[in-house]
Image 1: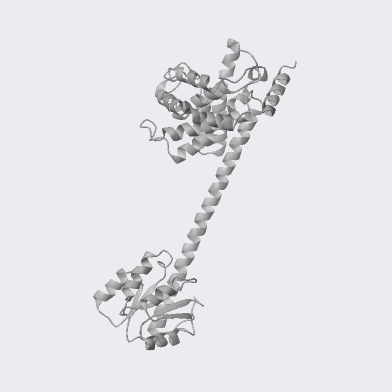
Image 2: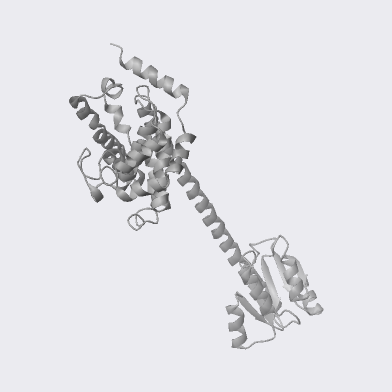
Length: 384
């Protein structure tokens, strides 16, 4: 029975042998089925393998002057370009030890001389079929990995757009600008990066959690959507009753995000962190904050970072009803709030790197157009 029709047409086989007669024999045997390249030494074989396209299979003599077949195999295993090319050793060395050595060097098969042409053709075809299958699986895996990465990027982009849309919705009714959202987002990220190696924070802060903090921060005041205009946009001090209503924005924000998560039907990391920030960023280290009166480590870490970011930005930002405070004065107020309003370690890191926060503030400074928009909001809210 003849060998079945080849399922791997137009494959390239590199034959390496220092004997011209052997090279001619192998070339004549293979040329009707495959493209054949020949090399008469190990050194010549490596030169051939430096260029593309690479062969699909190598028939490699072992006993050669200079670089032996074993030497060539070792070189091919070191190079990621050639590591996947199957090698069949051709040799007169027929001992089990020689075969084991060849296989340990990465060979897929071992043919002894003098060769049997039908056996050579059958084994070449078998190894090419195996390589074709392996290449297919490798290509499929690469495709699937790229597809997973693409879809992950799409999902994250959708999440980011959703967050920005929700934050922008809150901005249209708030007495703060969209740049407040961007500034606090970058403050929180900087604080997290500065604290990631701190003993109290290292187990929580890593690339992923910092990324989630950055994405979640814009939702810290999302609950203000639920506050009536005459309170939210009031230019003066709140009455005690108005302040109690204003304080509910933390709960309104947490509940709004929770409803969004419930509709998804699954727990999402960035929404969990967004809920923490929205609900607890007004808590104070000494327990005098709201809505729960949490103290110290009871306050979620994400909210403790946001507390510093939010207060600093509120102090330095101009509003239609107040001028922005100088950076140095704002820093001093943050200092005075250490271990009272703020986590002392978070406060210390802020104080030690205050100029970096100043740079962020200047980078995302409010424009005159921002302030004009806020003035319009104020006038609209005061109309009967």
